[in-house]
Length: 477
Image (tube, rainbow, N blue to C red; front, side):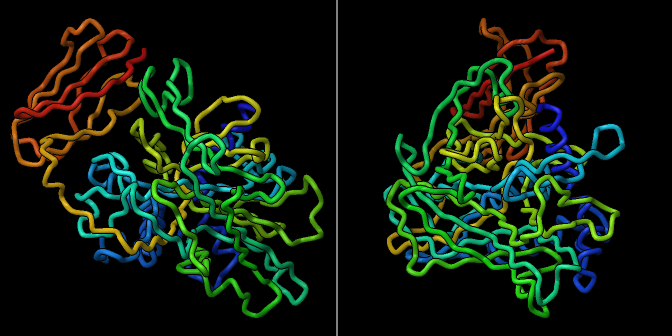
């Protein structure tokens, strides 16, 4: 099982690279987003995203509307940290009885089941933690509509991206009509809500140490999920289906394809009312309409096979940190509520876990995190994001990385006004084991050498003027 998971995760991070040949084979009349290289794909993906997700491009006033997509924030945050965001296209099928080509880890190919049945997002537009995970972060969204925990708002549209792979032989008057099923729920995070929130303490050896230090608290949101319908579910559920009709010429779904990237859009009329303090959960699932499918038949052959698919399938776009050849775990704040996940077949009943997925028992944290799902929120009472005049804190910093650390730790920071900044690292006895001073600091990444330190839990402190901020990091050997 662990080998299978590693194969899935490895191929997920490689999926964007193989996408070039697949789109070129499936839809020759469409421009291939991967004809040049992976960077070109990211450019085109961003172009498509920002056409629909305006981010900081369109400023709104009180009582307006705004698109919320964690990849927008994630991209801005990574740029500020001089890092990068990449996109993966993992396979998604309606059950675990379809086979796909995966790397066997030694240059060959093996076929295994497609375990992901749905991709999900939890979005909390009102959440605000400077530099970490806030849609109200004024450095990124100054002038945008600002939802707070006391504001009610509505959701009238959902959007997502990916690629819809089609066997050309099935593009005919008798071709199957596939379905992309979108479901929206909302909840407060309390027990019994359609979105449940738990706080866990990261234990030694837990996969969650990939995100933060041992002993640190982390919030985990779980989406109410119906395994039978393969969607987010609960008393607040609103569901819409997108029919991918392959019986017409040209196919009806073709109009929703931009630069070789499928853009799925659904509207809710009347809009969904989200009560103050609630989070929004969205799921996207693929339902094959092909009645010729035989259980455990091969759905995806992989490139350079022509066609690469035997049965039509969907691969959702997922944002992750790093590049296709160097995937990293995204940094999280302990109170982060904006999360992404997949529902695997073995966990697709009750609640679907966030941040990680597992098969039977928790074995590995996923390195692909943010399905590209957006919601459009409208608020009649909301103000705008502005610099807080009451915020006198001079310096802010996000969680140090990598976690755990081996040779060095990197601490992204931001100071409101240029100042000399001291960076210190202390052990559990309070002894300073590493330090440096950064002159005229403003925005950047402080790096400390920990290669000679013994394994253990350490505290880092960044101080400038009368302001300071601290955090913890684990060093391993």
